[in-house]
Amino acid sequence: MPQAALLTVHGMGETPRDYATSIFGNLHGRLGTLAAGVDFRSVYYQDILKPNQETVWARVNSATKLHYDDLRRFLLFGFGDAAGLENRKEIDGSVYELAQAAIARQLLGVYRNAPGSAVVFLAQSLGCQVLSSYIYDAQKALAGLPVLAGIWKDVDAWSMRTLGHRLTADERRFLAGASCTAFVTTGCNIPIFVAAHRTMDIKPIARPTPGFEWINIYDPDDALGWPLQPLSPEYAALVDDRAINAGQGMVNWILKSWNPMSHTAYWNDAQVIAVVEQMLQRAAG
Image (cartoon, rainbow, N blue to C red):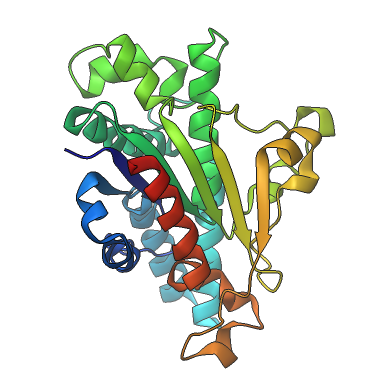
């Protein structure tokens, strides 16, 4: 029976459903027999966003001929994800709520498989904001504070509507991330979402478990990946920022290591894989 779980959350832009296959395979090989004690799961929310984005792309593309198709498509699908998740997020059935539901369903699967599992989260790019907001909302809800958007606005109503029953107290705590021992973020763009806030309002999640570690890995050449410690004293106390060259060691190092395309290279980087492996060894040990 698994003692640990790894949950991944993808980033912005067009993302295949099997986006985590490569890193899961690498970790299986590095963990050896210990991999049998890890429940590997990936959260996928691109299917919530992509149909509408494809419609907009088709309409614009058929109406006029634009230049820089690849760049335009990247911007439409990438920044469209971020805008869509934040727009009208407080309404029932919002994209924000549906993305949180995707996280909750995977966590519930982990709980039903092995309720004592220690959870390690790995998130990329926009997925860092999606997952951080999910945990932040969940922690507020468990503390009895009002939550204005997402499934934690009324988690009982959500569970009745989608699962057909209310969550038990233990399920609710587990889905809130109460068993999370590590949070690894790569190419994180949380600063973009909080930059307009007053400093005193920039608060990270609370530490879910006593030994919890948040390791934030970024490449200084990646314009979409940022350090988190400078955001506020609370972030500085919670997060361990680590700068790497995310293109190093790859066949296309020349193309990726020195420019913003390094944003896509993190999960193939040996340093990132080593950090996740270490967190899983600790969780499953």
